[in-house]
Length: 449
Image 1 (spheres, helix red, strand yellow):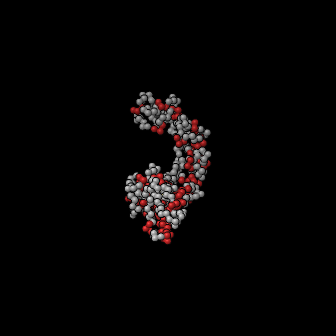
Image 2 (cartoon, rainbow, N blue to C red; image 1 turned 45 degrees about the vertical axis):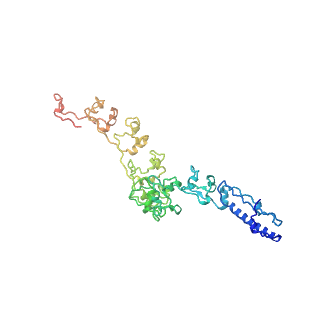
Image 3 (cartoon, one colour; image 1 turned 90 degrees about the vertical axis):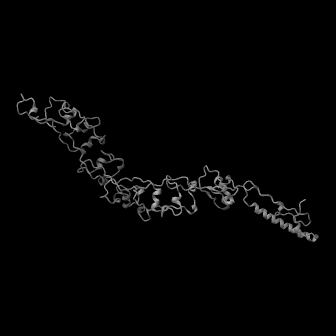
């Protein structure tokens, strides 16, 4: 038999009080129902059901009100609290909080966010299990920001990123320790190399502060000099100016848009001052290897399909461009022999011939020779008869009567008479009798060749 808990609230002095007792029971039932509804809304540990509310059983009475939809006798125990889903979380109150670190290999959320660990979960999450975390907490889009510098030899994050340091952390990261940083920020990137030579005494902010030649991007505003080389540790070697710079000081007159040698797209709108800030070295361009008078039309020989085409990096350069850089000439070597009309240079000067051309002249056609080598000299004549001396090397070789000069090393007998002709009229005659005077050196000192 169930004890009637409504007894203290009823007055049992007859039928006139039965209606009052029934009203008290109804009010108590409504109070218990409200408590049950509140308890069913609490976050319970996953897997545990809310305790059922035992409705009071009133004593039998003719005046007991009939049960209604709000009566505790019709209430059912609430179901076990289900893990929230992402859709439910979004519908309930907006986007879920992001997971601020990579999750691969970190599927056990409670290892760091359980009890008595580095980042315990808030009290409202107590009892949650791993499989419910990512129902609300999405992966951070793109992952956490990468470390914007190389991490080699940089072991203390707070030395630069503490409050008041070179690059302080945002307010949300205040009081984070070194061990906290690399939990979320696991990847680093190499920032752009300094696009010019960077000597130790270069002051970055002279060119890269607001209002100067190359101001910093918005993300770098208010960064001080000491910040620059903490991230930008490498520099690139910029091309040298391929001509003298002291007489050609207005760079844009030749390198502006639509000019002779326009700048690349990356240099658009750069000024003369910016040019010489990075391009500090000059190179001497190749000298013109022939006389200029009479040969001013460079592209007639040095065009794309001409005798001596331009190198690949000079393709499509115009006549007016040539003498802007190439303004010095050299006199090419003179032809070391007489040049007969109609003589074919390549009959002797070609690959596998008597005197091969140097590598720089490989594959040059006959028509190019006398365009540069326009002067000839007469080599020394042979100062003795040659009729009875057909082999020059019997006397003119190392260790012989008169060795050849170093410039003739390796030359053969066939080459000698091509350049050296006998002395006109022959050698001078001996102006005394020879008989009895065969030892010439008794009177004539050895000829010093």
